[in-house]
Image (cartoon, rainbow, N blue to C red; front, side, top):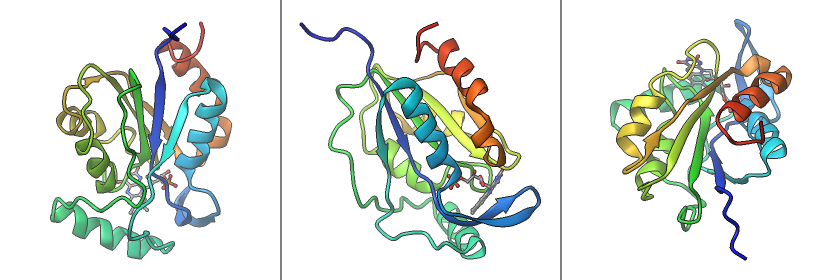
Amino acid sequence: MPDARPRALLVYFSRAGWNYHDGDRRYLQTGNTQRLADMIGKLTGCDIHRIEAAEPYSDDSDDTVARNVREQNADARPAIANPLASIDRYTTVLLASGIWNVRAPMIMSTFAESHDFTGKIVHPVTTHAMSGLGTTERDYAASCHGATLATGLAVRGEEVDDAGPAVQAWLRQNGLIAA
Ligand SMILES: Cc1cc2nc3c(=O)[nH]c(=O)nc-3n(C[C@H](O)[C@H](O)[C@H](O)COP(=O)(O)O)c2cc1C
């Protein structure tokens, strides 16, 4: 019998290495968004796709800031090393990343524009230092063609590991786990 439950996919981009941490810098073996994605995966059992950049980002934060400024100014679409063939089977897509200069890294636009989101629900999910969802709601509304934008989730990068209860509540409120 076909499975009638809505299928959810979590697509994320996350960078390990030097990053901001409570006004200081810290070397992260695993990026903040990756840890949040792992948590959401465990709680929901959703499918997960991690976006890898064809040209990997430096683990140096200053180099990454500089590259991101260049990519934002050029409205670039950095290439993806592991493109996902299709999102057809999913009704709900969570798009997760850190916030870089108040928006999602440009590679998230590369992903969004390479799929047809007609009839799908998109939830922006971010980890950040202080910018919350940044401009992701507006940006995904423009780049995810045909999608209906739904409530986002923003978690401070420094607080990901303690965010279980808040993440669970958000998943419940949005019908991604049982009430
Ligand atoms: C290039 C760069 C730009 C950033 N810009 C912002 C920003 O504008 N606002 C903010 O709140 N955090 C900013 N941050 C912090 C990241 O959003 C935050 O550390 C996030 O959790 C990183 O996710 P990741 O570890 O999964 O890559 C920036 C970090 C980097 C590396």
